[in-house]
Amino acid sequence: MLEINNQLSLPDEEIEMIAIRAQGAGGQNVNKVASAVHLRFDIRSSSLPETVKARLMCISDRRISKSGVIVIKAQEHRTFEKNREAARQRLAELIGNATVKLKKRRPTRPTRSAVRRRMDSKTHRGRVKVLRRKVTS
Image (cartoon, rainbow, N blue to C red; front, side, top):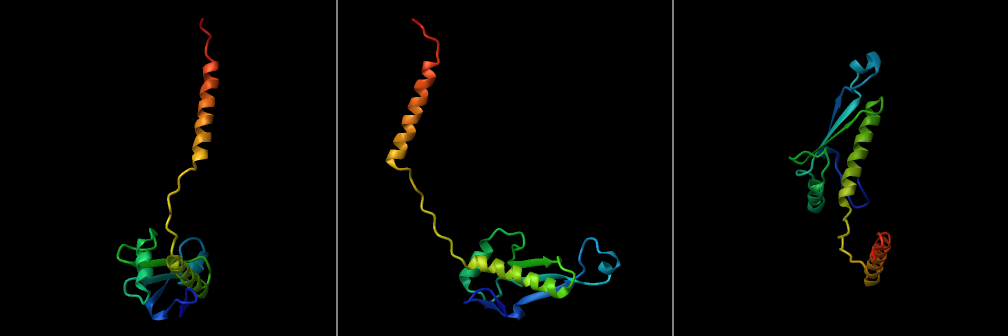
């Protein structure tokens, strides 16, 4: 079970992990050991609540495909187990962010005194600029 928060957890059967070879430098060992992890999680066929699924589908993240599959590649560590745990942690963080309901933004207006101060300062600046002109008599 992957614990996301106190109320939400995912069974391991819904998370698909594939061992792959890591990219980059590493000498001879990198060519023969599959220590990186490719994690795949299908949002639509998961046991997540519908509200969380909808929020996940709305997130603009390059790890989420249009078909609703989350693909996470972990290759920071040298061992498969550590990369596996890192990928699971990233998945839990991504889903955890989708469980938080954002506050609806209420548009605000400046106060009447703030508008008055702004207009007074603009008028004052205009008068200063007028006084810089040449005097014609």
